[in-house]
Length: 111
Image (cartoon, rainbow, N blue to C red):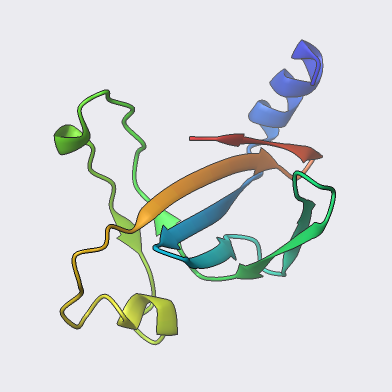
């Protein structure tokens, strides 16, 4: 991505987010876009991200895991969100958020 493209992309403020959740062997893929999003995996196989009404607060990057806190907002009717209402096991849920811009769809960035 060139600097002028990045500047235009950021100034038009049309980001989308991809949410990659992992718990043990289970993986869930969601996007903040209104429609499903398909990206290319490392072997160029297609990866489909399901649309979801999910949003997140400010991402604070810290080397101290204990201080890392991120608030996610989901509708209570969403099946993935509902699983967190019941007691969970000891397996951590790992989240990676990718941010992209509608104008440059092939270059999301991990946060």
